Image (cartoon, rainbow, N blue to C red; front, top):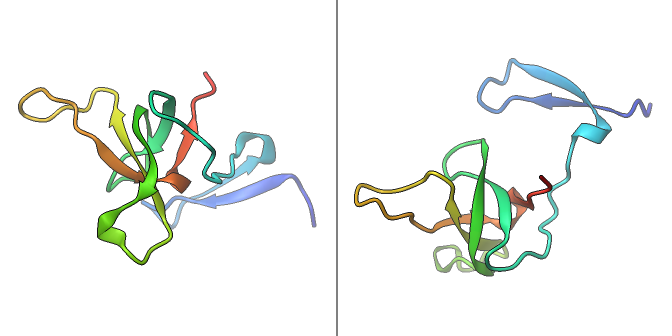
Length: 101
């Protein structure tokens, strides 16, 4: 039955379900993006999307040799280390999408 609605499970709380209309969902398919583009990406070790800027184009992660997964380096907004520098974070392409705002 096609209802135009999706049921989503919260990965942090699997007992929580959300029903949302199709127009409020986005399929992440690894768009073509380039250095300097503003994106939303899943911050490493979380399930949340945060704004950031692409600092290197998609490439395979050396630590994932044998994997077909492509990664981009991203500098997230308001993310800095103890020295005040903004580090590059590797994020799989399927967890990145271009900002529309």
